[in-house]
Length: 421
Image (tube, rainbow, N blue to C red; front, side):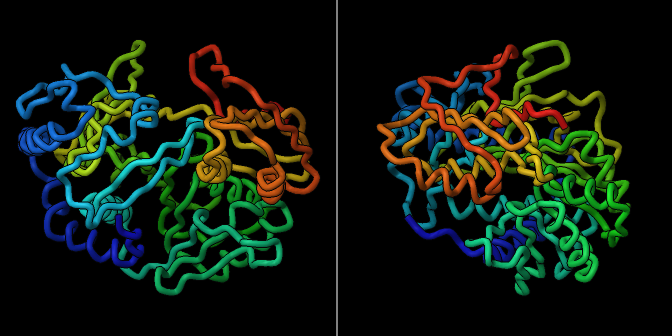
């Protein structure tokens, strides 16, 4: 399998795809888009018939999607090889993994075509928010200082992006973040909702003036109404939200109306399966990735159906809102903000651990529950990494358990903040 393509190459290929196809297809009628999805689905099912897991189900190109079984992540995790298409060329295929937001990461394959579509959908989303190629961006994600001596922010000139570390959001550092943010004067801000919220909330509480960008683009976590309100009030600009999963099965995002979420239907089918009145489970089928097809895949998130079409006039399907999961933002005793995604990205590389749960028991104490995949003999390295972004004053206790218990709703919460604010 190949190495991951550089972000600028993905941007170039994605822009060509956007300019050549997606900019026009968004304005097709709902019927035209559905017809194209049916054609893509037939091709996907034809490829899936070569995959051991789907071959055992007797899948054929004319099968109705709703009659196929829902696929759970645990099945993919346990039977990874059974989901690989033996007839798909390995050139341009990349191995990736989930962020582990359910506490149990899994690996999967993506194709170069899938990567191009992923970037093209992102470009369309940015264009809806008013982005122009070359605009300066401040990003609250993707940068991890290797040591405490490394800078708290880093400028990538090729991407025109100033990356801020979300591992170091203490009050003293946030004050410096505001100064550097104002000096850079980004036209766009992108990143994790909890991190941008922490930045905006700090600036508002301290009465610090903040440069007003054109828009904020959030992704990777659930954007709560409270977060949106604080960010928009402090930065004095609109927030546009993106929803997706690392498996790239299907994505959705907000247009200039900033209400309903448009499903990027050219790349996937999203089904909303009712679980309670007005509440649906999100089930996705990726239409692009034939190397490792995921069909009727339980995405693990909850959504609200749309009450009406979006007034923008696009033919893309819409959903009313995304509830996501109920993970918490941890705030330590010294005021450091720890977004849930930080734990996900740490544990996704720990193959000794099958599941995890971080519970804040006091402002400066956490218990980390671990379900081992095999015998755990040394937790020193894990403790050091956790201490790195929790802070030296936070006491860390490990608990080896057989299973992580769900909460009363049946959901397994991965990060729980019990300490009073």
